[in-house]
Image (tube, rainbow, N blue to C red; front, side, top):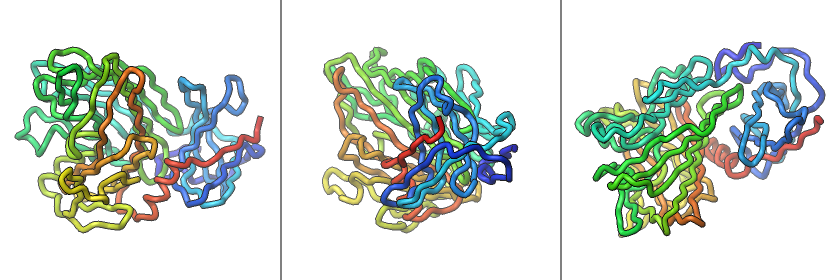
Length: 403
């Protein structure tokens, strides 16, 4: 069986299936795109790369993930109803025919994650160049359209601010603009006063039929050039139908007494910035979908210290719908409840949204965050967003039955 694209990934022909392999139990609410992580031990016969038949014989890929805490099997259940129990079977299939993820590096510039031949993510990881500071002062990820990979959905780096609106907002990005430590100040978001963050090395990569995962070491430097924070940034993209599912995780550590992270909703935290075309001629097509419903085009909400809007505080999820190259896309961003609070949200009609929080990193208290991002063509509903958020916050229980 050959999986030609994510759109047909879950169509299952008739072939022989093995005995029941595992079962997945649904929770209290409906879930969608539930990432299942099942710890396994070395040598366990269940530790396999392959495909699973789920419930009605739809097929999902399964892949072994190598983690610091131990190996685990990873697969994604597209839909799981509340209280439902799905049986999983391992089909007999030509695994060599599967579409898989792979990393392709343009050394010194970027690393692409492809699914088959379709671009999914691009990690902009060129080393910081003081002579080209504005272009190289921070690493980030670009996102491609989930169908063909031909349309760039995010805004990249530009040589000067004249080439696009607010070019300090780039793709999927994580940082703060008001950082203080040892009597010093740093703005990682804008890169002012020669402050920069830099990709130092790739710590781990693995790619297969179910996911592509990359872990990178990134250092944050003050205006004196010295490192004040070390970051481990991890992005994982999963093989799912109808869109691109991304998990973003980051850990910040320091050897200093304390590094205070502060800022404002527009220039701190974890954000998504859409293609510059949205800022140039697409603002009128941009709207936000929130837990309390669909907003009007051009309507935005932003946390304000002088008059905090409770609708911008600790949002479990938020979604932005925009048009680029004549096609509408929706990006759902899910904040995990374990991330520091309070989180303060920001929305802009030119295609940027996210949130930030205040935090002090110390040697004994590193910062750990995790977010989930879903990108699809077309629009979404509140119910669809809630189902994906539920799957992120409360992943389903999995019980292996095959040993």
